[in-house]
Image (tube, rainbow, N blue to C red; front, side):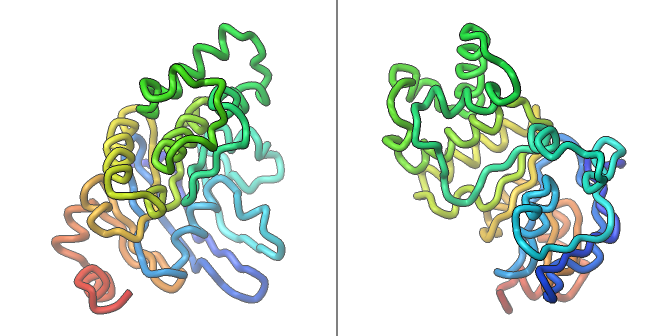
Length: 251
């Protein structure tokens, strides 16, 4: 099946260090794809390459091709702001802006030219509902977002990403800083969001990958070792290195 993102021979260097080596992968639409592997294996670097967050890092060199909507996202004609509107990102540590809950959500739509209060009100409500946090914050929209708990802050950040109506949501270990109850809430939310969005999630937690993902990619030393349906990868890995990792022999 042709994916919503198609990656061909992607190579990435930080200075002299090669972080990704010839990655080929097709990401299915309206699925959750998990990226697993030991620390430093390239999974977060790969995730950030999908909406050009690596552009912000000095001395990065990228070769190969990432096609989204039949266009190479690294083509000079691509508007990076428009790309990041389509391909949103949620980071490992919740990072709400130091402003009200309402203004956090309205920030993105305002930068894209939406100014009518009635329209912003609707976007804020829909986004907070989409991130399963509306009922908790509806009476405190003017309060500072930094007053929320860690789990609420992360759901707020997901709502903020949803507010600009992306097609794809990138999540870089979104539960690693959260307690077990908040982690469960985010996992349940991620499964609900799959109905409307394509989700690519980096996780250190292999149990999490088995709980929520449709497909799993295993990275090792900058290489994509194996990519398949999650149940197949964990029950019948095709590469010995994958089996060694998921059975705990290393990593």
